[in-house]
Image (cartoon, rainbow, N blue to C red; front, side, top):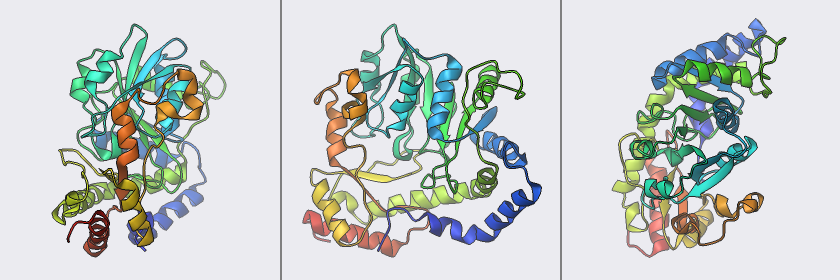
Length: 358
């Protein structure tokens, strides 16, 4: 059996450090807004090259908190891709704004700046640019459109090409992410001190002090134990990223691209997932499943066709590239530490299923 992602294989060598860190939190007895949260926020800010970061409960809350901090709500439109996880649009809707979906570039699977430009109206208040599967979104091109950008970097922590163009960047530490926690967790990174202060208050019921409440906020705090673990994992991240990039290149060298369209490499791609495309995607996935190889298909149906978002009025055919990619995509196993032998087996299975001689 080859799993799609093997998180345990990544953290197993660090178990002595993890246990020591958790024991330290238990001995200290501060479980909310403790010293590890403060230290992790400072260390993450240095790593990202940002003025500050704010630990929150999860990546979905991170997006919603940024929108609330910017005052983007009822009557506003926010452009985002429909080929992404539901949380991106969900956070926009929960903030009271209207998600407006733009199509994607079929090569990068990220937002198509030309299609984004065509959807901007007087009500457009932000663009949520998703760094999908670890590939940086086209931030420079999007920045020329004159609309504030929020970077949804849930899948791209560790990329040097993110977190700087947007008014804020948001991260998830769900256990399968490149930088992961042992549970839920999230982060907002930014350079604007006034916006940062509002978000810090909004994550804690709109208050600085527990006594005076200046906003209607929420309760979304990064857990002290998770912060302690994240501090350990952050020190490993560059090595993990290098291992992911090496594994991605090995898939190319093994000839996986003879059976499907594999993701093109580019600076800053951190390969949260190795997602390829083929009209035979269903058959290739079936072959991997039969061989006990982990695989997945993402975002089918895409967001503009999801039941909860029918009120937005989209129909099949409105986003042709998004719809095609949602049908044709599939991922193969990849994590920091996957062996070449495991990758050999994956590629041999896919090539055989595609009728390509190994």
